[in-house]
Length: 104
Length: 417
Image (cartoon, rainbow over all chains, first blue to last red):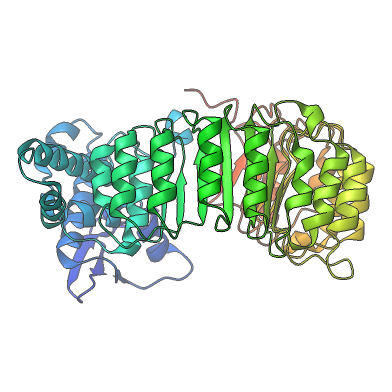
């Protein structure tokens, strides 16, 4: 993974075509995204996620980037980081399924 | 290492956990608020607040909830009032009998129901299931120990002629009499029967005379209370009846079985069309410690199993290298996905030199003492899809081996918790 640079990003595409950029380092926290980005069937720098809606995808990206930052900082500020992460109730079910799919 | 065992990477909570907490929090607060309003609006409100979800996704939701041990009467509400046909709950330990009743009333179209760890399922709830689900044809229950003999009989009577699959495990209250009722009321339709760890069933010998469905595909007889109850003769008779159509055969823990069953049962009745059995996918002979190398070598050399995906000879402690070599000569080599050789202590590292299975994903090598770093590295190299090796108790495996990406070895002595 030494070839992943800090500034590398990937574009995730939601069900309605909305694009959402994410730092590569954060994206590969999800084993599913990692396989899509780095596996033998590379989708270049765009990944289409037809089952995930745009709002949910935003939230997933927020989570992944938060986690990525937390891991880099050694996990000292985990609790405050989690407290900042709010899930709106109306999204929680869909988000759970997306999280299950992405295995995060 | 604890993280490794739980397949977990960091202490940071997963997104799934965060979502679940949110969902449960919401349901509980809704329940508090809505004690005065009627139930119907509660579901509507739940749906509205938590966002809609399609029927296809409900199954994933059930899995996610069970995996996180968060399925209870509150989260059960998410599954109500739908036109689902099949439902699997992997962990029902927190669902009360009232919960089952509500489930049944609001999901009347269910055809297949799986309830694992359903300790709180009682007589009343089981009869509810039988009466209120007119389309139900498949029931899998694990641990239904509140249900007594009389109720099982009534249940099978009500379900007469429509129970295609019945799988039960972990209860001491289902008896020989119940088994007879089940078999006699469903003999023409029953396609799948699993009996595992049932303390009060001893008369397995009656099974063959009732199995008459030509599409019978799954048979599991596992861990009988008295090992003497499941003899070679019983199993040979059963295979004689349904052997040609079996997809899954599991006889784990039937300790009384010997080579006679392998040769006269498997050899004679699993032979398929001119010794090519394209149907059998899953064969499990765990803990049959009386089996010897000769009988399995004979069967594997006589019959080709091109569809075999899962093969277990866990704790068949007498088996030697020749069984593995014969398995690799069999066409099963190209279809195998899971292989369990746990505790096959007579094996030597020679057994693995030729193991090149294109589909193999998982192998359990626990307590196979010959396994060393070389074997692990070789398996990784020769089996491109291999993802996981269990190596508990293999003290010749040291930490220093090289693994390709995507392959994990679990159970090393050097891992500490």
